[in-house]
Amino acid sequence: MVAQNIAFGIIAVIMVVGALRVVTVNNVVHAALWLVLVLAGAAAQYILLTAEFVAVTQVLVYIGAVMVLFLFGTMLTRAQLGKEKLLNNPTWYLGIPASLLLLGVMILALISSFGDEKLPTDSELVSTQAISDQIFGPYLLPFWALSFVLLVAVIGAIVLARKD
Amino acid sequence: MYALLSSIPYWGETLLRLLGGAVAVLLPAGTIVYLFLFKMMSFMQSRLGPMEAGPYGSMQLFAEVGKWLQKEDLLPERADSFVFKIAPLIVLASTFLLVAVVPFGPDAWFTNFETGVFYALAVSSISVLGILMAGWSSANKYSLLGGLRAAGQLIAYELPMILAVVGVVIQAGSMNLQNIVVAQNAGSIFGFDGLGNPYLLTQFVGFVIFMIAVQAELTQTPFDMPIAESELVSGYMTEYSGFRFLMFFIGEFATAGVFAFIASVLFLGGWGVPFSWFGWTGIDDVDNWMNIGGPLIMLTKMLGLVFIIMWVRFSYPRFREDQLQRFAWKFLIPVSLVNIMATSVLKVAF
Picture: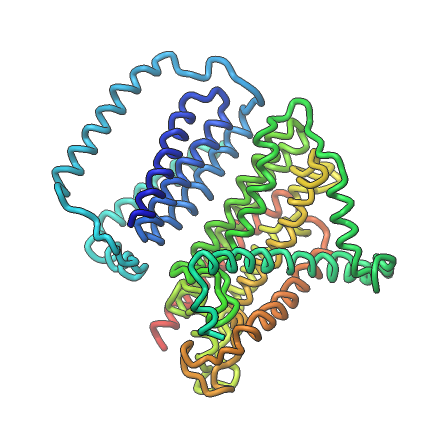
């Protein structure tokens, strides 16, 4: 368990530094690449929690698809090499109270729902079957709702992109 | 032998696995380059290929590596040096991550990941990131165009690949590659178990779609739009030289080998022989010699599949961009969806 704690600390530091660089670096592509590092760190944390399926999904969806499309989009439109001026939004400081508020809400939610509960020291591997039983059992309705949202987004994208 | 292995400490075991991983990536890459790129292509073009270095030119590979290592590591003046330098490493890293889940024998595996297939598909998509980085950071229009073409193509062909694998997962009832191997070799076709049940037979549509998608993921002709030499010099690799070009080169052929390994696990029964030949019933009965025989069987199957990949590569002209996208979205994806539906209906029926 000690080794896991050390690994958690190292990955967490990398993630925090990466997240700060995403918003401070002055090149769009570099910001996106720092974001890749943050998302990869999240996947590594899931592995530490023995949540294989979630970790692999994180890599497949966020790194393999979302970030690739992100980079694809920026490179297709505007992605200069070197430093770019005026990349920062002039109202960037409004982000600080917003993120502090989010942090507060998350801390409150974590404490009120888990309290002193601790993760089991020898957490068992969560099998994929168990996850699918959950998704297609008690969480079927949210799953369907999510699918509908995505369907609407896809149709919306097609409508926006079509010229005729 | 098993007692000997179990006395090795954890760090030693990890070291051995890392070493095995390097062998499993580099050995197929070298074999593929010599057998297919040097010799088979030459024979198809009525020439002999390399003949001077070693018997039948078999040492040519080492000469080539020496040549690349001597070359200057060029960096374009306006390039983004850090991203430019790290891009080939990311492409190669994705190959090494990919081989980690491939089982080579009952005990000869690197990691027995429960979500093996899913993991393989996920890490194979990391290489796109390296290609995009290489294309952008080179400060070259041809490179950027090549990188964008590569990204568009790999996104389009990742989907049919994942959907083609779903059929196998449904039939085996597991995403673990080791379980998929066992399910194929312990299985039977209508009571006849002399062949096992290789999914090549029951999932033939999935196999064909998977191999087409592999061809596209590897950007081998006819899917070589990203590095089309007559239009884009050499695509995202244009500005690379020396060792960094060598990394892209190794990455390309090593990935071909690893994808062929995965295809042979998914569709051809992997390292196993039909279990009924020796009266095995499950993975625990399998004799220890399969840990030596398994890798050789895998190597043979891998070479067979790469032969097909290279055969197609040397035979067909390049797809146009619109043909390429239409083929993925309007043909391969619908067909693989129908395949999934048919497989699940038959799975429930039998």
